[in-house]
Amino acid sequence: METSAPRAGSQLAATTARHSTSYNAGLLPVPSRDELAEMAASCQGSFEGNFESLDLAEFAKKQPWWRKLFGQESGPSAEKYSVATQLLIGGVTGWCTGFIFQKVGKLAATAVGGGFFLLQLANHTGYIKVDWQRVEKDMKKAKEQLKIRKSNHIPTEVKSKAEEVVSFVKKNVLVTGGFFGGFLLGMAS
Image (cartoon, rainbow, N blue to C red; front, side, top):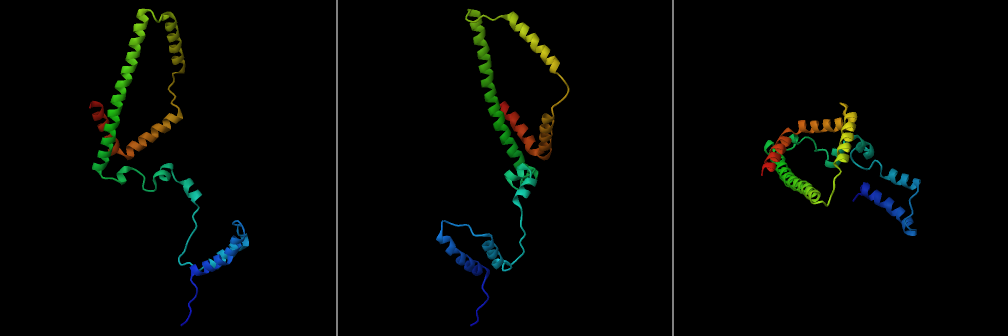
């Protein structure tokens, strides 16, 4: 019976066994550059198929942040889900957001209104004395400052965020439509 040529795994095992004695001698010494080159040369050419190297750092730099986070399949939801699913997802999330917004809004309005009521009650009974002339003077100063700062120039950060929102809405029309419809229903319930 003839012996066949050694396989790639056995060559690697033999090379590893040859170098393992140096690992047992010390506390995990690092192989020298020559030893690594010898190991690579003994294994080279014995693998089937062509392999090319991929620099993951360069690949990751070229990818947008959402692809890094969600993977290659992230994109407009129109590419991934049916129309009914998109409307359902948008409607449910919109309804939940609207319902919570309604409850929090009522709570905030009650707190602010109650606070004003208590301040007026304290002012009326004499616990607090308000200097209305000073309040009026401060309001005039604030109005003047607002007139000075008022301009038609929109900051570039606001423009870029607005462009992102418009782009998202254009790509996901069904989801955003369902969201706004659900939001209005949640506000009404």
